[in-house]
Image (spheres, one colour):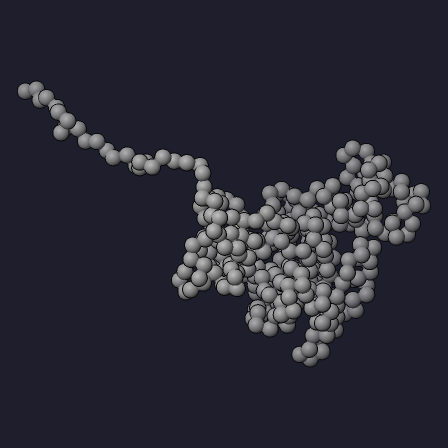
Length: 334
């Protein structure tokens, strides 16, 4: 028997697309509040909004755009800061500076570590653990690449004299502050405070060099965990697990970062580093195309400058220091 079908026998599946037409236009969020990112924790962002601590998430329209400590952002939603409230970050203001690092020295894809800092404070101990000049050099490269000022902070001067280590950075005109312990007192802390007050400074260095101890002394209520150096390996134990921005009592911000054991700089090109040395960059304009500016580079104008005597002792020392930084861009931090 043949059955004739009618409309009641046909099942129409409802469309999943909905009736509202799609558009690429995004809300302008003209009423968004301005915020400053002071911490990042598992996909949530601690944002300071009009003096209130607000927890926020990243809005979908930002896509894969990164949000890091130091970012100035636009925030909508519940910005009351009340327990359980959640706001949304809808816009990131263009960054003035960006401290970047790559995963290693062969990965040219970099990620931003901290935004909008104007000073990189490289903290290194003079002993326990032993200072690693290569790591300091690589941090200097990162600072120059980010167009940030650099400050060398040497700790534990009660265990070793700072002079020999500082000598190798004299040609680079890198300012330095030195601290030492006398009982429970940190001698030299006032000089560190003066160098940081009124600025946004990011502290970076190996674990165990005294970075968190400095932060706790500068910001008494910071309560940053302090680690110790392993007697066998000579390395410090990681205590800070994420970057955090802390307000200095005298004005400005200090951004404490987790202790590092490497700092990939594959994204930094020779030209990027050379640009930080205006005097050498002018001389290097006479270099042949593709010149690496290293000591073994053929026909490098920097060698001709030294050979002619025009560079003088200081110019020659700066070339040597520049080439050391250039060579230390890759090859590990030990």
